[in-house]
Image 1 (cartoon, rainbow, N blue to C red):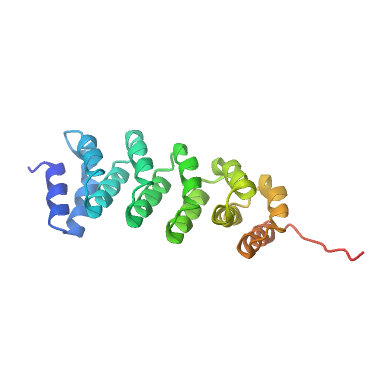
Image 2 (cartoon, rainbow, N blue to C red):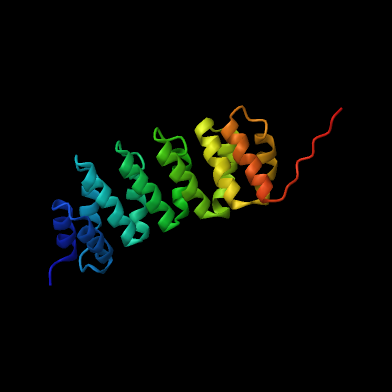
Length: 192
């Protein structure tokens, strides 16, 4: 029987994505620890190899895979960062919350949007960090935080979301209003 790690590496080298995906899933059953090789792959000059390293780390779904995936959030390649965001959402490890908050302001709007979606998947454990980003972040972070909070419907976020209705960014106010509407928090306007 071929070593699952070698099958994975061969599929990545051959650019055989379906086989690489299948092999990545089988790495968890490997008889030897694939982590050292996957960590090494994260430093490869080729972005495709780094992407597959992140994907394989996510497939391992171990606590030891979390830190290397978090480091991949700073990769120069947008697709590698996006893969790392999705991987952290898949793993659901709370150590990923603060690094994902930082990705709300990613240079790629795509990665920022994925980070907001990932944070929403964490549920209540991400609420406090999202509120902080909504109140103190730059515009992309505030917008992403409001977007994630609109999905979470956390009562804890209501005061911050109400304050966000006065945000200078139309995107932030849109998601804040959406979040409040989803929680059936009525906004009443009084004329003086």
